[in-house]
Length: 293
Ligand SMILES: NC(=O)c1ccc[n+]([C@@H]2O[C@H](COP(=O)([O-])OP(=O)(O)OC[C@H]3O[C@@H](n4cnc5c(N)ncnc54)[C@H](OP(=O)(O)O)[C@@H]3O)[C@@H](O)[C@H]2O)c1
Image (cartoon, rainbow, N blue to C red; front, top):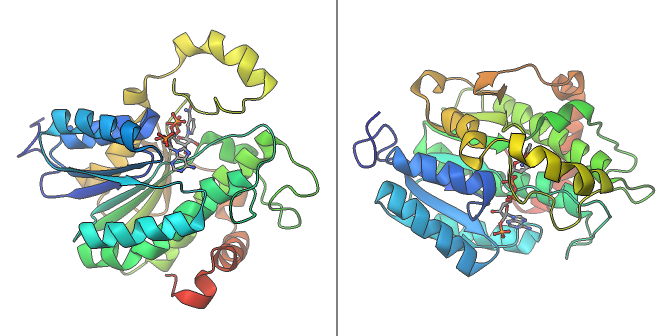
């Protein structure tokens, strides 16, 4: 395959959230190698700048850096404003940021952090960038979910684990929410040339969950690390769904190992998806301020 300028992603602008580390960083490097112009986000200027240097070295092109804590809705809004100011087009948005916490944390907005960061942040960011994606069409939205979605359930009576919290329940629910969001977005974008797909990266050797791991993660992950995928291998499905020409028209699909895969039964429940969309619109304040697709 032709690399760098002249490669298959030449002329395409890709925004990767969480491009400072792990799977997102490897995704950005991979797409830069294919000639794309990258924009990456992270919370810490020095970390995201270091990643940008690696991405630049891989692709030789321009890399835009954005700093934002996506668990804060005001920072998501500020990020969207900055992106709209600096990127005249967005051909691909990769919603990659996600985290796991064994104990319950509350964000600056008073929301449970897993739900806020893993689901509400990509919901809000995608909505705020949607017009630019539509103007840039054909465009793609890729959301990094997880096979944890198969164990997820959307508990509308306790979405934010106020009555009872478990890290795995919150994570599984948030990853199911990623898939429900993707399918609903694809339905709402029918007739446009913007696609929406979700991916599972596999078990990848990153710093994922390191800040507040479960006992199982603390004890077992060190033994599994040698068998986990490298970030580069973990990024392969995101890269394919973001770039492959044979997937240009494919939308509303869950991918694993770079291939379409059936997701959980609940993920196809359009009533649940519509209700989650409605709740998310309210919790992000989009109901009052803007249209969602
Ligand atoms: N690793 C796996 O085995 C695995 C399996 C299935 C799915 N996934 C999914 O893959 C995605 C990426 O995970 P990863 O393994 O690459 O994790 P990671 O190594 O922990 O990287 C997470 C990225 O997200 C950024 N980030 C974290 N919290 C943030 C916040 N509050 N605001 C803004 N950015 C934030 C981090 O940036 P800074 O820390 O530099 O700010 C970093 O760039 C997640 O959605 C995860 O659910 C991972």
